[in-house]
Image (cartoon, rainbow, N blue to C red; front, top):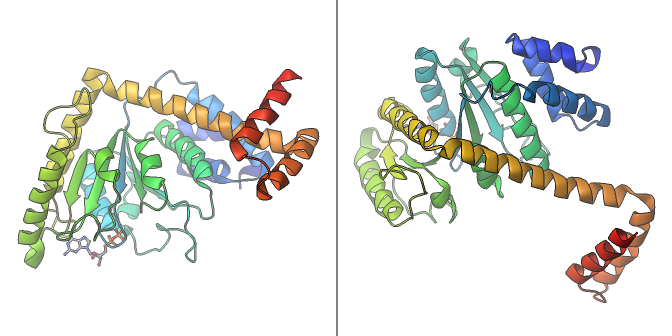
Length: 333
Ligand code: GDP
C-alpha cells in the first residue's frame, strides 16, 4: 500500500509513466480506508489540474454476457492497437462480483498475451464494491491511466445490475458483444443496452458459426435501424458488425469504425459535450451520496432519522413525505 509515499510522489511517478506508481495509486483509489480516501482525493486533485492534457485519450466501454468472448476480444483487439503504437489499458467494472478472488479479470489465463505486452496495462476489478463506489473508483482510475500516458482505455463489464449504464456513462464509445443466434432475451441482453450501444458486435463469426453470425448481424442491424440516431452522430451509427476474436476477422474494421466515430464526435463537439455531461452527473451523484452519508453520520440528525425509519417500517409514514419533512426541518435551522 502507498502509505510510505505521499500523493505528490505518486503523482510525479504517474506523470513519468512509472507502472509501480500507477499500480499503487490505483490501489489507493480503490481503498475504502478513510486515510487512503483522503490521500487519493488529493492525488486526484493534483492530477486533474492538468488543463485538458489527457483529452486526447479514447474511452471505450464493452459489455456482453459471460462466455460471449469479451476477454478473447479485448486481448486480440488490444494487441492490434498496441501494434499500431497505441497504449491500451483494460479495466473491469463488476460491482456484484462474489466469485472467489472476486475479480472477473483475476484469473491468470485471461488476456495473458496482452497482459505481457509492454504497451498494455490490465487491472483486475476489486470485489465487494457498491455501484456508487465502483463509479467513483473507475472514474478516478481512468484519470490515473490517462495521466500515465494510456491513450486507449477499455472498460469491460459483464452487465450485472446497472453496470453497463454506468460504464456507458464514463466512456466515449460503447460496444455490445453478442453471440451468433438467439434473440435478445435468449442472450440475456437487457432492454436499454441496445439503445446505448454504438456498435453491436456479433462475435464468433468463424467456422461453423459464421453463417449464423451473419444472419444475426442482419437481424440486429434491422433492430438498430428502428432506434433513433443520437444527435450529432453519423448516419451509419449505431450499427451491427461481425467479428471473430479467435481468427481476428473483422477486428481491424471495428477499430476503423470506432476511430471514424471518434473523429466525428470530436469534430462535432459531441465528445466534449458528452464528457462534460458525464462529469456533471458524477458530481451530482457524489453530492447525493455524500449528503446522505453525512446526514446519517451526524449524531443529532441520525437521532431523528432512526425513529423515522421505524415509523416507515411500521407503515405509519410514507417514505417520500417523511424525507421531505425531515429536510424541511433541517434547512430551517
Ligand atoms: P467472456 O466470458 O465474455 O470473457 O468470454 P471468453 O473470452 O472467456 O470466451 C468464452 C469462450 O468462447 C472461450 O472458450 C473462447 O475460446 C471462446 N471464444 C471467444 N471468442 C471466440 C471466437 O471469436 N470464436 C470462437 N469460435 N470462439 C470464441
